[in-house]
Amino acid sequence: MPPTKHPSPSRSPIPGFGLTLGYTMIYLSLIVLVPLAGVFVKAAGLGLDGLWPILGSPRVLSALKLSFGTALIAAAINLVFGMLVAWVFVRYEFPGKRLFDATIDLPFALPTAVAGIALTALYAGNGWVGQFLEPLGIKVAFAPLGIVVALTFIGLPFVVRTVEPVLRDAEKELEEAAASLGATRWQTVRRVVFPAILPALLTGFALAFARGVGEYGSVIFIAGNLPHVSEIAPLLIVIKLEEYGYAGATAVAAAMLVISFALLLVINALQAWTNRYRTQRHVEPALPHPVLQGAGA
Image (cartoon, rainbow, N blue to C red; front, side, top):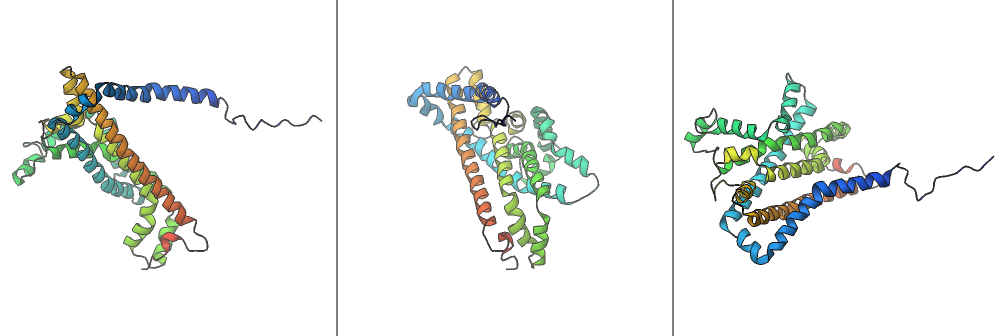
């Protein structure tokens, strides 16, 4: 009987791995890496003497501060309320649940320009909501607050759809065990539920923030686009391109890329630290479940 041939350990068990990996790298390079590298190369060609006057101008600094500031605020709002919405959808049954659940995905399918027009009509001084807010001194449309509203609208699905499956897979037995040990509802949420969904929350926050930084269509209608007041960085890039100021547009785009990469690296580092922290707590030997320790404290 001939000896059985075993596959060589140097060969990959996945058929065509080398070919598919090559296609993947080429595709990512053409779609992502090459365009981003082109922005940095174009910006580097300006030199420091050409970059600093552009990036240091008050108008550019104001636009960058507004774009990243409003994106962070909107992502933080979605972090809280997106978690609450996901919790309600996972843990409760109520009439019209499927309709409301489908509505969450509306910002994904709705053209951003339509969303911007609808929000502007709603929050303008003569809109359904704005007519009651402006007499109170709360100006939403054509103000930075309107940008936050628009970015919150388009960023909510990222948090909800990221946290929702994690909540569905959460171990309800741990919550029941914590309650049997005398933990209050707040202690159960803080020690059992929140540590389990924290990485998903940070992921949803990062996605909502990244979408908000680059959002254009839904913002330009409700922002008002006043320089130094409500002019976002993506709009400033478009304005410079229309004025044939390619150097200025490239400089602003490169600055946005660098700041975005830095913030996303920080968020990913926090997510990795959270995963390591959870793993270390779960592998402690000869101890009760770590999230249940001190539940009755």
